[in-house]
Image (cartoon, rainbow, N blue to C red; front, side):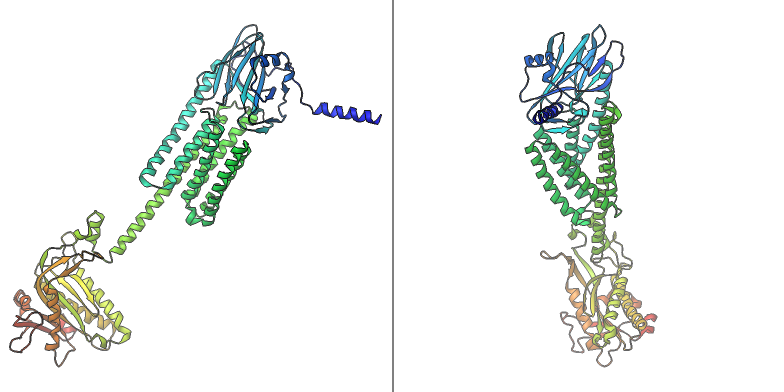
Length: 627
């Protein structure tokens, strides 16, 4: 008896666990002639998984004997295996006594056959052209109509969703209205994002920035995936995986470049590189194993990580992070609304159904703002670097040179290189070694700074005019020229040079007094006139320089102070060449003393033909001010 009890119990368990066999006693959908507008999603109550494509004879046999179908309640789990054929039957009852026009709308453009069993005959339905989905226009005969769909499964999937096997049913008028609305949405969204995508590609061609190219690939690949999801195009599983991989990888590249992770968040950047490679390998495994679960895991993890990166950058008040977060907010909101429509409303609300498209549209626009901010920031940084570079160049070059360089002139074209007449001044501090160590360096530095200010006083870059041009500094002295390359202040080269020399003396006396240097500091200045030329070296650093006999003679005449000041050298002395003296106005000539070289048996080095020179001694600040 005990054995019999076990057998009965086991039999009951097997019977309850065995899938329910179907019989067409429950209609999926009923419609009458005067039911008006129809807009409804119906799910398959009857299905069969086959290892081969069913022939028409097999389908007719199964319809006549429905026990070959499984009966599926709404929340029953279903297992679809890659490579097998899914056969679904929909029992649609026409309660009127006349034919009723109806439209079956398939939401995927995957290879699938639609066959309608009416009046004991099975006929194949031909799809109508449509931008979105695949519509089938049919005439339902009175009584029982059975729609049979059959397709090969491109991937394995399992779940309890009624959408795994369901179709949309419309009346013809509603179908035309819905398809028109869908076409408008598709055209608007994908048309807009396509324009942005091609714009970013053009920007990449001109700017060669990685974020433009990655943005183009992200827009294109994501748009293709969404188009496949909304049955605008049909993608095979290998192509789908490939495009999704491009979308995820381009998202990593785009996000890391726009957020400047490499410099702002280097650790997150390294993690991003690692995850990008991991995601690619995971997608490959998903394709090889034929499981869509990998797609969900990869997509979700990639999105979550990039959101974390954007948030970490946004914390630092970087607007790029804000824009990316805003874009993902719109995308996720649209995705949630679409899933809500699919799970709750049966995918019949047009606004909610296409919410993910709207989310993608606003996401792309937010990302465009992020790119614009990135480009603007890069431009500001480049301008700041250029400005800094020119600020540094201003320490070496004159303003008119920098301006000409900005105007695409060559450096060699910014200063005169022809010959010109000039009066060269050689300034040298007498016995600079006697200056105490505390004041020596700062005194010489401040003196040269003040003398340079005097030289560039009255500078006019357009007219190339200034008091003098500093040729070079030499330890405790310097050389400058008056009249070339800059025109002199009053176009009187000799007079302007002498006036400038006296300003140098006065500047030195004033500085010595302000610094309270105990020992008296004096200087000697030599002036010589002649033709000089500007030039740039053929090799090495292109530094503007002057050459000509007058430069050498200025140093030689300054050295003559050792002949003139034999007993008392604590005075300032200005020594000028005879040619300079002859070009001075009479009032200035009267202030100089003549020294005959021939009678003194003295020769000015490198000016052996000189017979006379002129000098003037300044003993103290009061005498300089009187001059």
